[in-house]
Image (tube, rainbow, N blue to C red; front, side, top):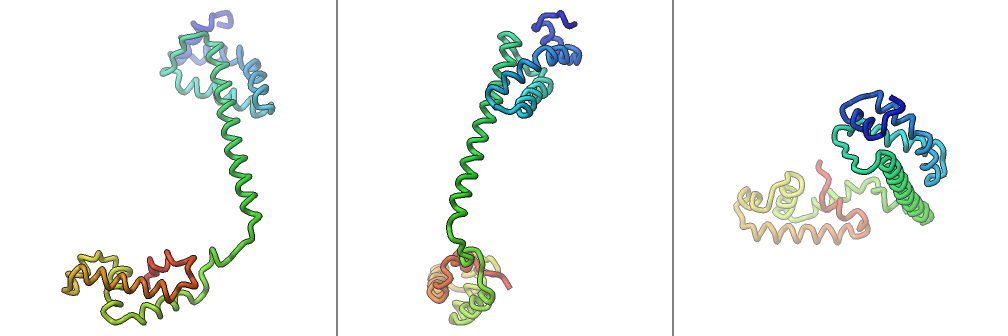
Length: 192
């Protein structure tokens, strides 16, 4: 089988012949590894890339259509995998660089940590709302009712619900402005 032409081995490979696959692997593995090292400058990574290429060829053997020579197909495949790897590395390096640059900024714990007792302050602000406004606010934020459902439940108009919610949110924004970094989550309101 060692003397068979690449095209014949390729046809046998497509039909699942493991011996044909093994012959092609042995025939090209060393040369492909040397070729990949030229791109990747890393012996282990080059070998891993070539092995991955052969694994993909075996897995997709029945879908594979090699029009040109098998040898050229293998070398093109390895080159493409090397270029993909290089591109991926560049993206990872750019990400790492961004993380490093951002880590140089001063850390502001207030940006990430909600003050202990803040929940109590939120509840106190909600409790300070007029009774009807508070009821509308709690139906919306704590029970998840839509404005129309609130209007039907309380036998009031949707416009009244909208107006009362607007006033409640404005009041909370004003009362809790010192916590503006948390404002979005505050207005989504923590359930009891």
